[in-house]
Image 1 (tube, rainbow, N blue to C red):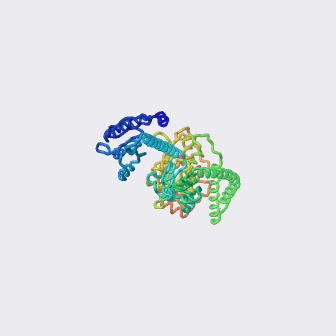
Image 2: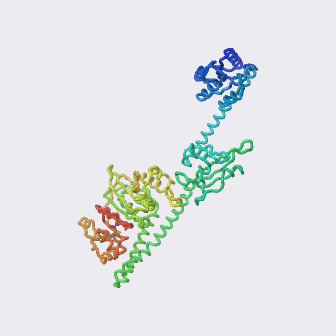
Image 3: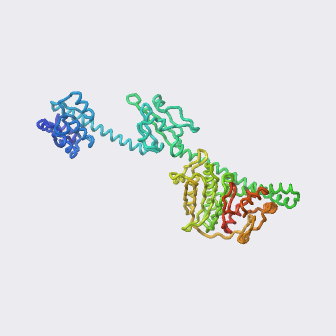
Length: 591
């Protein structure tokens, strides 16, 4: 064969010869050059060979097994392969089993037995270089496949015939939340412990099913460090020559998609509920006003004590219904993006009233309504945020049954001049890894079906629309969410048009200046105060005196705001002194 033919075959393959017989080495070099190969040098011992390969980086190493130096040809080839990507063909006059076994352990691409002829050399070198090129092409394809698999969103897991995991892509390790090295050769059932939504493990083995049927669907829920994930996909048998040698499982995480679908359904139901609430509020308001007016008239005319007591209870129940109707009307109105100057304590107190049924059996409420400037805000949207924070706080406290719970609502002015509204609970707190994730859409720590995962994400969006920011601090004693808003505008002093202020106990001069009417802490006087027009009852009494009074006037427990530094009992609201006229006004308009 001509040199041109070899050049067409492999034009620039670089070869290094390691041969300690000078005549044979020169003959090899001459023949290889005639075949069109680029001989980069000849070495006679192991040291020269290692240096020459390191310098020239050949494609092929023709290595005599018996060479000079501290290492023979096989040991030298092993050293070369540990340092460089070089194909090896052995030159040897020895074909004994021991030598061949040692040589085979280094993965050579051919053997050339001495003495040999030029066609033998040509064929062995060509086959070795072709094999080497095929191996490199396969490595390139495998690398391209590995990178491709790492870029796709589907989780891809391969197994052997026994179901042991042989590979995972990046999406699969992210899905299960473990490093791939820890998952190799583990049973697929351990790596992907799929179960039904009711918690029962799936009995069908996708590996066995795929081997039997070729392709089978896979669907279920997977418990991961991020919570339960809903997955769907396919298991396909891997075959070579018609015989299976493994299985590939491809899974898509549909959790966010399913949550988005549920949120859409929830939003549609909420929209329908808003329409219904608006209708209920409108249709109920007029007849309810008549009922309350007639009850007030009857109370003024009735002298029989027993009938009077019954009318009082009916009147109180009617007032509560009126409050519910007012809240329904407020929340059924379309949200407006127009901001106005408001007292930020008003939506804080409004949220407390709206959520009363949620917290009254779980925690006492500590109100610390410090003086703050007005903010430019939508009161409805700000109340929406605070309602969400209170509901989340109550849910967290329900998970800890070993302590007396307190819900603390605070308004204050921080060091930067921003208005701070805080909701603090006595729940388990938020673990460090989850403190940023709780604001992600669809992320929830609540059991499936109990949380949408959108509340805090929407709340943060609303706060940011107000030019504010959200902060979360937490420890083992509970979590505290704080909204910080820039001050803006001024609010006019509002008159008390909705309720009277009744002060039960020793009234202070400051309370008198605020317009509070003194009421003696005796049952008859308190009942009389409650029976008149809607009133905010502020009880400045010690715990023992307050409990004694509520035994005679049970309605006082639900209606009174207890002024005290002491911890509130479950269901109570405590207003922490000092407070100002505007704080009382905010409370008054929500009772």
